[in-house]
Length: 394
Image (cartoon, rainbow, N blue to C red):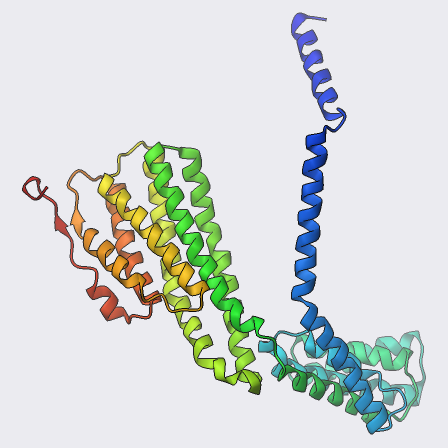
């Protein structure tokens, strides 16, 4: 074997030995730490869902009690099932989807019950019943959920509860389950009201951290950090999407629950913040992309512009803290106004990247001022027109 071949063989041997080495105490400690973190995360996830789990259990029991004890139905299978399915939907979907579930159950149960009465149960009967019930649901203009429910319930009637003559009773059980689910919706947890504001605070905190890393990458000329920060800025859209979903859920909760109706102004106020926050995220991505280009090309950025970025990062941290403390971040307006005034001074030594970044800083200041509750016109007035910095002014 040649010397190169021997060297490669030894390298392969060392890699194989490294892969099969005995775990050290540090490896075991890291594995134990990961296990504890995962167990903690799973426990926190379960605790966060505990209200929903208990609500489903109580809703199913209540639906069964109403159908069995009060209405005297022998086997009110569809009552607890419909209650659980309806409670499993998000608050924003419940009113419309509960109606779809009940209608789907009605179509499926009626078609299945009628077919079993005349033709009995069997393999070919299932095919006909599913096709027929789903077709009827489609003719009624049903969505996918309703159509699927019709097929599922027809199969259940045909196979598991095939006693004929109970179509109306089973449909009524489904109505009971849906009504119970809507009643339980009135008792809504406070979490859907808190989480939109908390998520908005997390989004603003992410903006602050991205700005901080951007400044560091520019000062240190760290192209790897610039690339990682750009990827992080692009991924921030998913956090904003979650904030939108949580906001819609919170609005649906206060509109459905009589006991949470007093929180509607606060929830709507958070929903109004999402539009300027969306624009701030978009401007941030442009800014970070240009900063990354400046880092890759070793293009200098004026120190004054870097100080603007640092000040903006500090101010967004303040905004995030106030949002997390359930306050409108009005105190940040002073800092944003100062950044807006400072950003109006144009440095003649700046290149294209620096000017693009300065323009995005100015746009973000307007967006963040609107985030503090100012209308667009007032926010714009707090960011004056640009002026050229001259040697005499220095």
